Structures are given as structure tokens and as C-alpha cells.
Length: 112
Image (cartoon, rainbow, N blue to C red; front, side):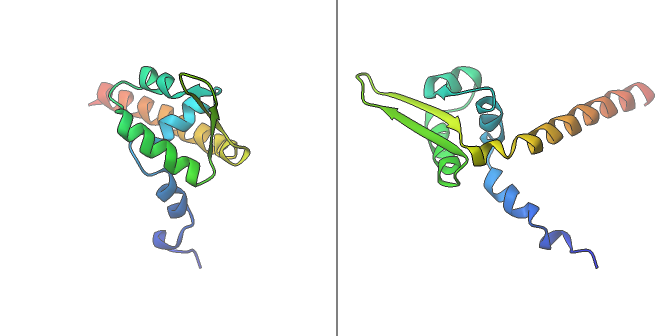
């Protein structure tokens, strides 16, 4: 018997990735280490408060590493942990699905 949608462990994944910016933050981190100011430049509309909150949540779940350097001014870098890197295949599949969905939408606009 197949589990119902409420029984899927995928809901755990969705709960961790829940938030407007988390998946985008992870996608940027898959391309390498970023500083806090890099995110604000890469993602227009993302406030510092929300960025801090979502990075901390990703860090709490063990997906992101926060490295603080003892220099003045303070330097903080963020990178994916090996556990965070395990999400890369999922991000690739979601991107592929999104591309196919965009194509489908464009085709339906031409048909309708």
C-alpha cells in the first residue's frame, strides 16, 4: 500500500527548505563560499534580517557552515556542509522540472 501524501518523508524536507529564500541561498552556495554581503547583492529584495534568520536555520539543520574570522572588520563566510551538498541532486532535479514546466507554459500560451 502506498503511503498518503501526509505520510511522505518529503514533508520533512519541505519543512527544512520552507522559506522564501532558503533554496535560492543553497543554490548560490553550491557555486562556492559566500560572504553575507554577497547574498544581498545576488538576491535583490532579501533583507538582512530575513537573510540572517534563514542562514541561521540552515546552519541549525547542518546544511550550512558559518565561518567567522577574527579580523576587524568582522569577516563571516558561509558554505555548504557535506550534508548540505547532499541536496545538490535534489536541487538539480527541481531545476530540471522547473525548466520543463516553463517550456510547458510557453507551449500552452502558443496553443491557446
